[in-house]
Length: 285
Image 1 (cartoon, rainbow, N blue to C red):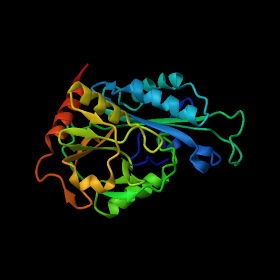
Image 2 (spheres, rainbow, N blue to C red):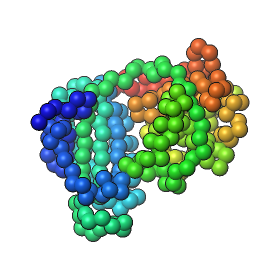
Image 3 (cartoon, rainbow, N blue to C red):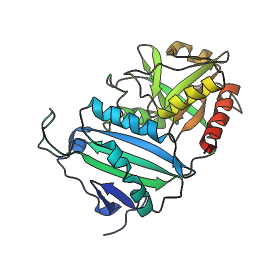
């Protein structure tokens, strides 16, 4: 069979490592039919997965939220074999992990006694020391459901929102819910005013990103005051700085939101300080 271009070379699927073109799932898999599953993404940097424990703990929590019983610790032990087969053991890469409820005749309620589908793959990806891009973003009323804290595979709302950004020549769409900024389509979002950092508190309306958590830890370490408050959408233009966070996004300065510009050439001092501290953290160990 012809090799697939642009895809990882190997895929871990239900206990076996296969060539990507040979990795197949049933059309009756509930992940395919309903988006009934959970996913996680981790970055291997300098030979170690960055905040691996936090990522795997979130994966466990999300699986618990939708009542999928799975031994994540056992799955973790399969990762080195996948990286070895993929030629990525010593390379910087991203790892995608997905667990669905499994295969069963189509019904909305959870079927009993089925085996979850477990899939993983990795691809070489060296993240920049500091993400020096300057993002333009647009805002959009959040039309998604009320459990955005679950890292689910059914991401149609996020996909539609990110396409909205692309159609507006922007990197990202930032969500507004009940007049307050919550998160973005695949990132968390922070604002800065008079040296204070603002971000919406964790809760059901946003994914509590691991990089978000890291940045909050860095703020504490650097003695940067943080207020866990959602910024009113009407106040966005009055902020001094704004930035996005995410596993592959890292810490990314927002240059422009809805046509309003925060800076001309270089990000503000708080964003810059956090980017440098994030780089130092990656280089530890």
